[in-house]
Image (tube, rainbow, N blue to C red):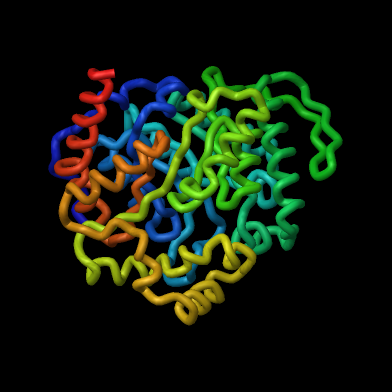
Length: 357
């Protein structure tokens, strides 16, 4: 892998806006996969993403990788802190942090308040109910869906209350807290909530500022997210929607090695999220899923127009943040391809659409 990217900075006309509202405008980000790459390399990848013209980076926040053969699992919060020092405009956030088992909500509130003070207007917090490979592995605790959902809602409320800087005395069903957070965000930190099914989509709409999901869930259960937001009296136009899109720059042969590392994806949320051991997930995925099945919904192409269309289709569907996830070993080659061939076309189209509206 080259240590430096050779392209000139390609700044999106949208990416200089650091307000929360900017996350509701069309933007394209790049996934920093902590399962597949070590933290120093991820920082370098994030730098290249900013230079190529990406608007944000998303950080997977795990204690163990999904599969044993992925081989890495650094702490996402450390990556964000280091990357912020080496970049200037990227939004950075987690997709997603679980605030209710291995992380206490008070610790999450403190960490992201501190990150927001270092990088004001550049930090978002993605929250989710967790996976057994992280939560059960680290704590020995792992509840059923209803309990995990209750924990997530209660934790989210506590994070918001702590960010006010006022003393918080809380005796809840799952958490007890009696504290004040002394260093609070000076600018709002948006909370996006992960959802991969209809009940979770409604929960995200009701309790979060925005959504993290996948293309299939967005297509099938968007109405649940919108119903939850309406129930809470929210304006959907003010709610970011982040959707992760897997891509391969190349052909089906180029997709085989990445697909081996991310073989679990089609069954990640049913049933592998209940499996504690990454080696067991890997073995089951290899026995139950073909490589063709793994990448059947990915964008696999060397033609820039295919990648442009995949992003544009999501933006046209109401997604505001398209998170590009590429699992090829040479991340910077893919980033350079997007910076040279894909992002300029998308930015041109968005600028033209904004001018005609």
